[in-house]
Image (cartoon, rainbow, N blue to C red; front, side, top):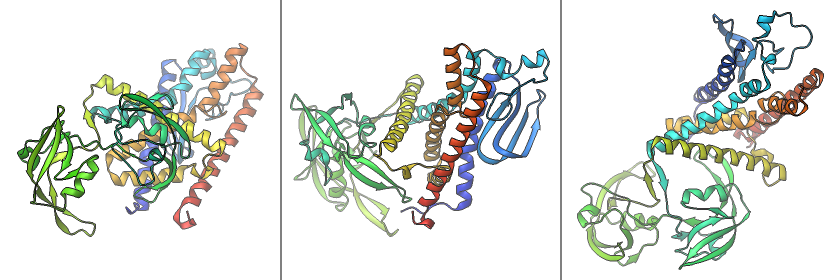
Length: 461
């Protein structure tokens, strides 16, 4: 298990996650507001007492406030940062009133409000697209090559060699399509369609309900189908390696090492690592023909669990789980959009499971848990950390779109009612709705904070 980062690292990482995300969200509101000629009186990162700030030439007060759990843009004419409508005479001239938020057409107000969550969604898209563009898209054939010890799929009648083509009617083209239909549904029975010896077979598989933990001891319940997809097809060969000298080629399928047959690439390292320098044969299938290639297992030095140097066998092939295909910027952007919507779908699934009782409310997290995870991901390097930022960004987009008065989604709900009624809701109705919504949000924040505290080791979590 990896040690958790210290408190200073955790706080720094938390601010590095939340600060830019809040800034981007509020900039979405601000920039679209400016586009439509709305004056901003204040732009704040954080709530409460101002720590530092300045006023620009347009009269907008840019400030950093004491409570770093959000932010707001206060447009001209707003009574407060929650954008509750001001009542009575505003004392503004006609020119000043023309630059207030509430006199703008309905569609402009809706776009200004929607721009905040949209920028968070766009950031997630750009991060995920950037990863795909930089590394390529993983393509792994959904061919079953092995089972876990307590495999739900094997119990349902699945066999080695089956190729999964659909789960609950949703097409499966790559192994990467499978988790969205399994991981988030522990204990659920899914219908898995497979191709077996030229015919289609549909198998009802009850996913195992498993608790897993990461390197930091964070626990989660997942649905496990219990399959191994590490097809033993060579995807890369190292220069001047035993595999290269033996005549192995990219695309070869390893079917045996010596006299031992191979179904999964995971079976290769245990056979090779203890036999540095040994002579053996590797049997591969190439374009439908079997080739038996003599090979001398090479050697490499690595650290064992105790940190001691040990010599292990190597043959110098890369394989095991698909291949990375390069993608262009436009395709990467499309994949980023798809994956961002998939992430939002998992949020909806999680909330629905909590409401129906399929998941415990203790799985909800708040600012303390976000801070904890921020520090942990930061300690793993920039790429895991930026990926975590993308996940929090899509969460902020989703939460802000909930139709709760006081949030962006609540304002959009008011505008939807205004569109139907052809006139705004009464000021008193809006004020009471916003007060109720803010109270609900504060109650939820209190609940998830208590939840977070209860999950900490110091409290027995």
